[in-house]
Amino acid sequence: MNNSMRPMRSLEDRSRRRRQRFTEDKLVKIRTEHNNIGLFKTCLAAFLILAQLGIIVGLSTLPALALRWYLMILAVVSVLSALSVLSSHRNNQAKAVWVFFILVFFFGGFIIYFMSNDKYMYARARRRHRDIFVRSAGFVPPYAPVNAPSGIGSVCSYLNNAGGFASYRNTRLEYFPSGAALFDDVLESLKSARSFIFIEYYAVADGVLLNRIWDVLEEKLKQGVKVKMLYDDVGSRAFSHRMRKKMRAAGAEVRVFSRLLSRFTFAMNYRDHRKIIVVDGKTAYTGGSNIADEYVNEKHMHGYWKDTGLKVEGEAVDAFTLFFLRQWEFVTGRKSDYSPYFGRFDRIESDSVAAPYVDGPEYGLTICKSVFENVISSAARRLYIMTPYFIPDDSVVQALANKAMSGVDVRIILPSVPDKYYVYLVTRDNAEKLIKYGVKIYYLRDSFVHSKLVLTESCAVVGTVNFDMRSFYQQFEDGVVTDDFSVVAAVAQDFENTFPDCENPAKASKGGIVRTAAVGLLRLVSPLM
Image (cartoon, rainbow, N blue to C red; front, side, top):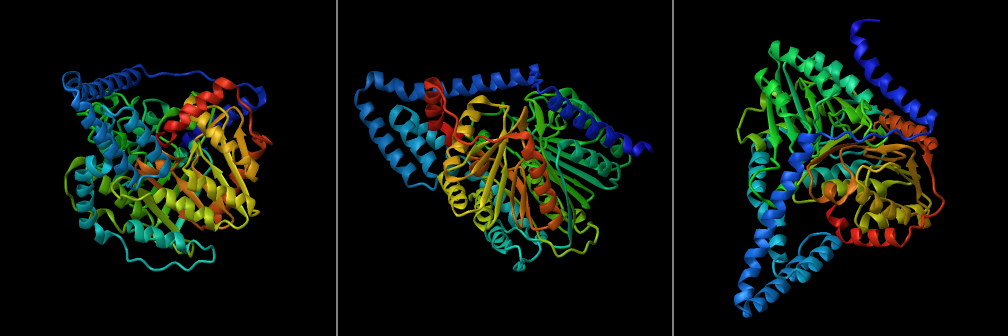
């Protein structure tokens, strides 16, 4: 076997052997592997946030000690703020939480609300995004209505009207049922790079996977290939300063999205959760997998890690190039000529539709949530979902219940091993309440499911979007909706291969008093999770 095949075998085969050990031994072999630097940074950030919140509350309450009438003013302002919440465009669950918070903590809750309101705190950033969109609008091809037997046309029309996204044909897609398989292919594509490599990821961490990627990038930099990399400061706590310094010294442009320890602003809650790689404008990748060892099962923090990815070739690669360049300009503040990076894709003939899209505070719409709702409503026979978290709002829950009661085969695969226990409690509670409507709930044994998939009989959605409020309302996300038969078949096969490894409860599990109380309390803040 030639040397080019060795990395593929070492990542994918090692991941497969680990999965086999989990199955054969019937044991969850979990060891929590902390990164001390990342933990310290997180604790320091939490301390600074709490300290600054304390200052805000203190400044608003101190006058009350001297001026009793000040309490009346605070009460009136709190009521007016609550009315402002009720008239806002937030989802109803979030409105209820904010009204409760403002009225109970009337001495300072309204200040925190307005500081967290993107209408005010993100307005300047949104204007910057808008300027970037206008300047780069010429790189979006004209929209042509999609008439496809799959019925995907309504989703494509929505995406065009909501965010100006194009729908592409002449595109080849390849689905990967594991993070190891995805990054095996990524490594081979990186080796073929001749001009530029764009990388935008929520989580980047030192380890085996990053070292293998860096070995290729370092060689490419020596050959004159441009490397631009964006990473999110919250997700990439384990991306060491030493590694970043090494990459920059070799010529890579590495920039951080929204520093965690920057000046205090609630805008820091808007994280870049996208996962995008573009190689030479010819190949693009996205999916759930981040650049960290747990995603390829080189280490086990929460049992076996189940993830997915998607490879894009052909015309639709230009969409991912544009997504990256827009975010790069927003982060760096530097205008550049986009034109050298477009139209470099290989010519491919295909009648299937691929519609890449992104979402975030810059759009002011719930694009990702609406895509899910459109796809859910189109399901006639089958609706399969795979997600790590299940904390949607009432409209999504009702849509799933209605589909199941109308005879559609609705199935949801969730983890059996949590990464955040408080989120997992609400996830299970939300999911199992759907069992009485006919929705089938599955828990993948000894595993953490990180895949983000929606599948019907005619189309599939693959991307970075979780079924939770953060993905729907706060984070920068990306995805692809497609009716490509090969992808629909591959995703369906992945589901069929996964179901036998799952537990399928026939009814909702009963919790004790403590768990019921905990879930009730967590439900109060679940719209903000």
